Length: 66
Length: 146
Image (tube, rainbow over all chains, first blue to last red; front, side, top):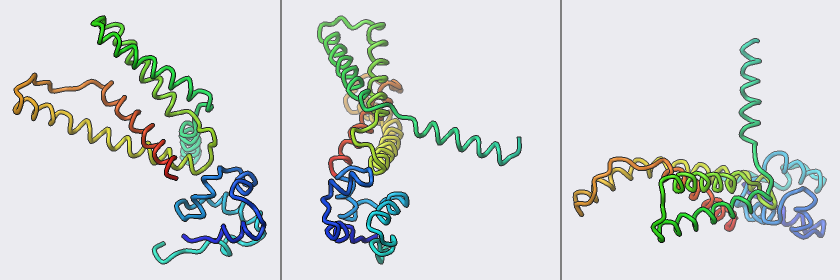
């Protein structure tokens, strides 16, 4: 799974910490998601979708090994 | 009660048990209890005051302390922490089973190589403390490297 959370976050001018607080997780979790070390749950993905006002598919993409 | 209701009831109960956790403040209490028991066990051993009763009580209190640490929530508990904790429980469980399978073989090897005492068993305290310590260690390592 690949994602463009970092880009979406930059568009909204949010730090990792600010984004983490908005969706109720820790900064390290956001860092791990951005680095593709952790795949978030559907609930978290939908929270991000609501915040970015974009469908989940716009910032999460399946990679070749998925 | 229909089969579906029984299944639903079972699922709900297991989900509730699996979600059981202590508040973060309990972690400090667990650490304090474990360290205190470890220090006391070592002191009693060093001073040769180790009685069967004191060892029995301290070992069990140490296990309770380790369990409290294992079950305590993290400061910033979120879904990633829950996933890391699940991984650490899996690893600790598998390694504890491997340990309990290998330990008797080590005893036999030691007996034939060093001609020491042949002990064909080990205490459940050994396995449980090994498993709980591994879980705590794996969880902290996974958390640090997340």
